[in-house]
Image (cartoon, rainbow, N blue to C red; front, side, top):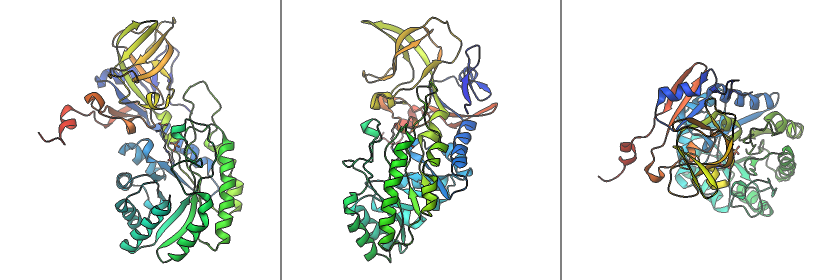
Length: 418
Ligand code: LLP
């Protein structure tokens, strides 16, 4: 279900509010705008998908770490996937049940691991040295660490190489040929460790259910091997995150969470496992947009450019992964369309939001929306070119409120020696 869309006249709405009206009250652009109903509905699709089975839905906090959005998810019963001590402290502050959180990462520091052991998080083992660090931490803390082994199933998720993570040559996870070494080492340290599961994460923006299904089959084989080796506390299969969303907004057939889970449900139940799933993008991506204003229109060579006040500092995905975000005007416009590159004011040519987009010729000051920027946009935003990070605003029905104010010049300076 979609809570963000156009009416017949061509006004863009977020729930029961016209985006233009919000822009006029807010004044300063760009800002991120999120729909609460969309967020809750996306989370509910995962709840429905996992109904009737033991499951933890662990929202990947890295995708969007706004405290208010996190509180909405934690109040719905979401777990969380963490990649740093900072995210762990944030998860606690946002009210997540820390027993339903997983600390993940190929370079966890001792202090991050100790905090995770203290708080009772699940911890993914990523390498030989990582396991040794976890053992040391559990000894220091005086508490058993609950661990999962992150195994590389060596499956190609068919996505951009920067966001592909489960191949044999990836920097994540253990060499699966080395599994026995890990099992032996864990056995020696049974006073400090309890092996409760296996984990894999294949990559991000995955568009085929089969990829998850194949991974689950491989992982279930590892589960039997590990159980046969005498590990009877193994009850979690963590299948990672990575489900894509319809960035093109063409109604493309991206699998639903229901389809994803249905493809593995029976096998997981048969093996008497609790499923952990770690969605980020498919929970938060389509809840947000960047609202921006047109600064001007220019042409160079055979190109026409719409220059807006949003940029790669707020939405880096097009520059970094050649990612596509749908871009549209927020108010009605002429039917006549031309081809434009939509670019920001930053001093480099990588600063584009969209290329060769068919759009009406806008007027200066018109509002434009970069859609589906709820995931990996604010979270990856920077102060490049001394740009303050934008405000974040949440719509709930007919109401809107700031959930993070826009940075000021003073905010950007306050850590400097002045
Ligand atoms: N679990 C693990 C272990 C992960 O590494 C990730 C994402 C997720 C879950 C969540 O994946 P999702 O469901 O959001 O695809 N910045 C990139 C995406 C990087 C994803 C990193 N790992 C982008 O903007 O596309």
